[in-house]
Length: 347
Image (cartoon, rainbow, N blue to C red; front, side, top):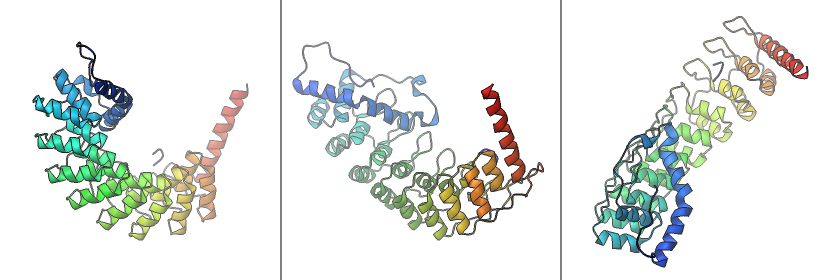
């Protein structure tokens, strides 16, 4: 492993009521939050939805989405009395219910659902009202949606379902609700990363504990062949490494290329993680499919402190890879290369 809505258009009528002006100000302030949300559920996988044309909502429908966005239930009620469709959506497929959920507006969400809003409607990137509730960390809204038949298995284009959202944004209470509703604790995104890996990367200890207690599989691999322990090691998450080891994770388990968690930590120069792994019996001389050792990986990445630490725990500097080069050979090459470039810069 040698290298690892526009939401509202001003009407052409006379002046809007003061309350409506206030709403407009709220909408402007919320623009960045909206764009962020679109990015989370859409741009996360590098696809731009503007290429996919959708029917533009009517002015009244835009007003409904805007009022839902700022939690203005009085305006929502007035618009619904005019029979404005609760199913209308904006450019990216986001509807009034989703805006209300994002705002955390329980009463608006309940009203829209009572008027027939589809709790399983999808945006173009695949987001649902439930994924918005999980992302925002709203237990009551999550429970409401589930009670109305929201599906837990719907995923965004990036492969994130509601459970994954609750894990990434660190909402243990929402996670528990989703698990109790039957959500898959071993859900994986489009890159094969599990909820356990997502929590391990971010250091979400409570999330990890919940997932492990409910039987999350610690040995599932992502598309890079990595495990939750390897992900934790590469991000220096020592407390999570401890939790995973206590759960019986194999410390020298290998990825598809033969590398171990120690390799992943060494490449990322995560010294505390390396020390923890070594103190728990990680093999400092393990070789991957290329014959590389953690020492060789440390030198290739110029992580000299990592190499020194490995030597302290008995790593052999003379083990050679499939190219016939040892850790000391790589150290020499790196020093020579760096020295040559320093001399060139001085000229």
